[in-house]
Image (cartoon, rainbow, N blue to C red; front, top):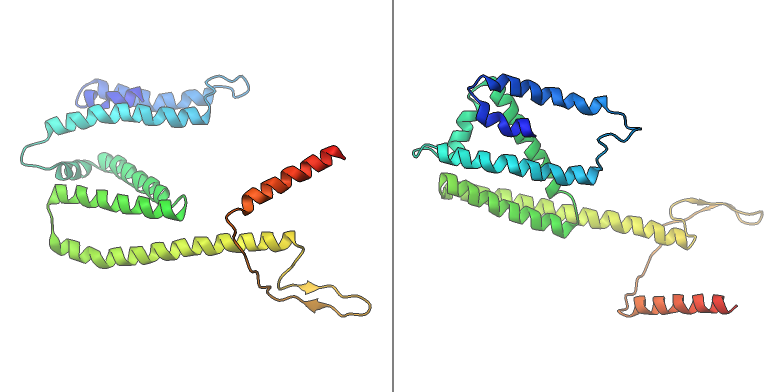
Length: 230
């Protein structure tokens, strides 16, 4: 991370290649350690916390340096686009960063509860619209063309939410019937007097009561006290 931080300062100097070699050479150091001895043994939660902090420390000064060096007649998006296509090696690294960011964003937007997915998608869409319009201006033709895409995305999000609910309900249904010893859509063994039969789909009726949980807890406490007295 230190070598990455020094890259902008060494670009165009004799130290650039040495810094690049150190960057790749230091990656071998963890392979030389022994897991049994616990050398450089860092817990994963600590790594997950440390990397964003170090990455932020690298990106903030580089972003400030970019804003100061930005020509007055050019936006940041056009400058970044020109930089990405400046050299094949630069394009390779830049596109790696872009696709990793897209993958992480897609994972972030599609994990969690249905409500959190919808909320994160709406907030991300608003932020993306604000960033695009701030860089390119408001193109109302583009906004109108986005309307059917937004509608399709909303329909897809609804189907995604309903699918998650149906899947979760199906799993809970199987657990409920299994706890009662009820098996659906399967062959039931017969006896000497009755032939085997096939069970169909059972109808489950659920009743919700606002004080059921409290009653269940009191019942459990009473049962535990009774067992203790016995």
